[in-house]
Length: 99
Image 1 (cartoon, rainbow, N blue to C red):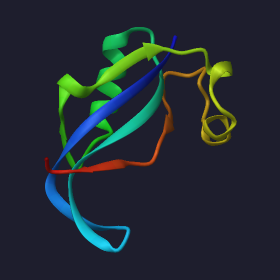
Image 2 (cartoon, rainbow, N blue to C red; image 1 turned 90 degrees about the horizontal axis):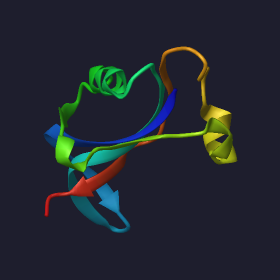
Image 3 (cartoon, rainbow, N blue to C red; image 1 turned 135 degrees about the vertical axis):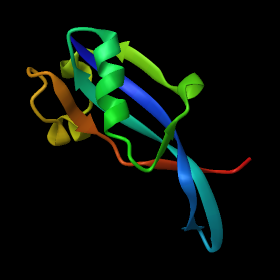
Image 4 (cartoon, one colour; image 1 turned 120 degrees about the vertical axis):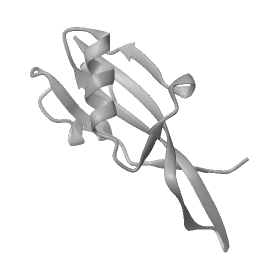
């Protein structure tokens, strides 16, 4: 089965970045993953093992089954082999500031 996962990560250390002309500080990020696995629980294990720069904030994480053919061209261009168990897609990070 193929899954689409959104992880929310709280960074171990905040990072600075430019937001337009102002400097901002990010304390976490969201990232999307495409995962092939026999069960949902295995997906969570795979993506959690892929995170080294922070802690997963589970209440903001989401998972759903996905038909790979329904994904956009940009995702498919970057996708790996979704017929074998493992992570076949990783998006960029979508950083967020401290609220």
